Length: 131
Length: 359
Image (cartoon, rainbow over all chains, first blue to last red; front, side):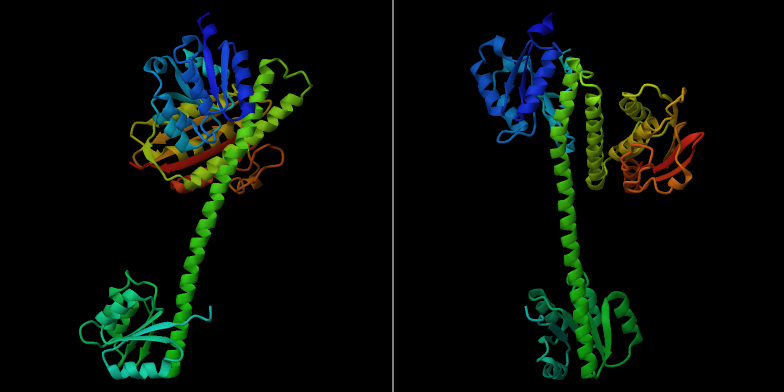
């Protein structure tokens, strides 16, 4: 199965949500590996360290917006400097509990973000993204 | 502060009057004098005075003309007009255009003038105090609103984690593992989430400026029905939309209004009804959109009909938040819409709305 070797990265400063969402995604069998990052910095250093190693790179990144120090949008500013080849192979969706209009608008305007998923995460919506 | 010094400007081309005025009042007030409107203007440009007394008869600019000139630039000082003889025309003009507080005839009586200045200053102070109070209130109100907004978001984040855990419990087949406890947790979480979402909706309705855009009612109703009937597939929707002209309206508020009414129509169905149905009829012309939402649900008691749009009104037997219809009404107020309701326990409830077409 093609989806079986897919990897997802979750970036969220809240450890509880990180645990819940990684479990949800593993149980949904959409991915065989979940990379957990508690900050944008963590995620960037992981991506930079593995940029030559295709097996370690995620196919999908679920990104929280509101995080201390580096928020979701600041992460994206750094993310887009990564090699093109990786950027083309990876999809980013925001994952947030926000109902804030301006956040939603900003997300829609960003070319790297395909959609904004609202927490609680619904595996069915993620599945749709992978199609 | 000692009871504040009252600053009075007196403009008169007759210097004798200026001297006499100073002699009578210099102990009570801080006095500035000018012999012409131009000179007077210079003074008020550099200094804020509380009361301005101007003589009507002056060469060049008259007292009333001077007051007219400064209506926009210096609205705050209270104006008193002095004149040597009763000139009805000047008086009418002064009252109508110069925003005059008092009219005093020359030669003045010291006590009368003194009282007038005192009253004028009180009027000035009241005006300024009121303005400061309003600014203060607006600020407090704004802070309160922002607080509600932030706190709603903060409250929602951990709640959403709880809802995530419930999803996990379901996926791992544990939902029935401890009697009905998980189901109860889920019901409570959903209710809490509903309250938070309504709070945010209310806040946004208050804050967000209207953005008018074309509205395709067919599409909008379809989306709303999809969204709210997701959890309850029993209700049959009969939608009839007659729109062949463009409708321009505030998408956000119209969505809020229709969303609340349609979700209510689904929520308040009779439990044993086998043909749960909701009729949605929309008629759009170049002036208005007329919308009717009719259900065959439990209806609203006659004595409750008047109260359903008030904040936190809920009927005893049902589990509403008391916010939905209140928000509908508030949102309609913002877009000049109207709503009426008729209901009885046998046939159900009909809401009729009229929204002006902004095209």
